[in-house]
Amino acid sequence: MKVKEICEKLGLNVHVQGDLDKEVHQGVVGDLLSFIMRTAPEGAVWVTIQNHVNVAAVAVLKDIPFIVLASGREPLQELIDSCRKENITLTSSKEDAFNLCGKLYELGIKD
Amino acid sequence: MSEPLVLELEVKPLDFLAAGETATQFKETLKSLGLPPEICRRAAIVVYEAEMNIVIHGGGGVMRLQVEEDKVTIMAEDEGPGIEDLELAMQEGYSSAPDFIREMGFGAGMGLPNIKRNANELYIDTAPGKGTKLRAVIYLNKGR
View 1 (cartoon, rainbow over the protein chains, first blue to last red):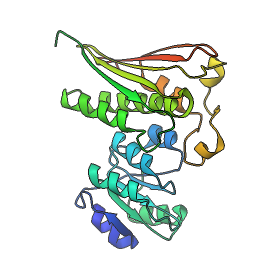
View 2 (view 1 turned 120 degrees about the vertical axis):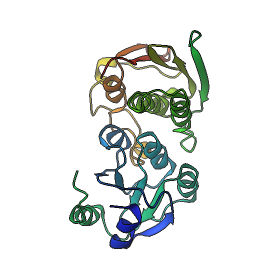
View 3 (view 1 turned 135 degrees about the vertical axis):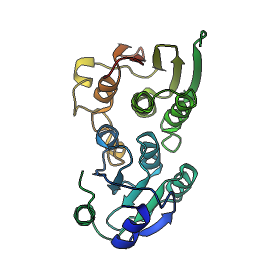
């Protein structure tokens, strides 16, 4: 499914538009950066409550094109700037990570 | 290439905003050399974790990337407090990072184990009060 379709279906606030036509089939959830460094599949959507510039760094290194900040976290300006520079789609939602992942699963993001 | 390509960058202590930049820059370099994506990703993980160790624990230091025909070597050097018990530090889940750093998602105790997983060879020279020198080698024609 395309990044923009996921944004629409989940009602995400889009802070940075990266490649909205990028196809995403996998997801990862977590707030420990080293854990994400280890486990994130390439091209995945990443659901997290971490809200600082290193989130963008980890996304770049793991080829993650799409970040969702959960539980009402509004992204810090540095993170927005960094995602813009790296062409990463940065979004946020009032919903918590558990519910967001459930909805992603229903959309077919199952790995 | 006959001459190895060497790239060196300084890593500042506790500069979390800049942290990740060395890894990003090194990865770009490897990609531009046309190395396989898998090698670039593994090297990026090694550089990132080593960089974070220097930022969090090492009091700043230097990172060096060396690319030769058959391998990528990553070197990280700091003059920080050194690692007291290296065996313990290599254990997954063990961390000596302070709480404020853990709250940012660092200090999961997976840094050195992640480096080990992604490198074919790992050498660490450290002693209390003597700083830490890390060297990780990734061979281009070997898997993990």
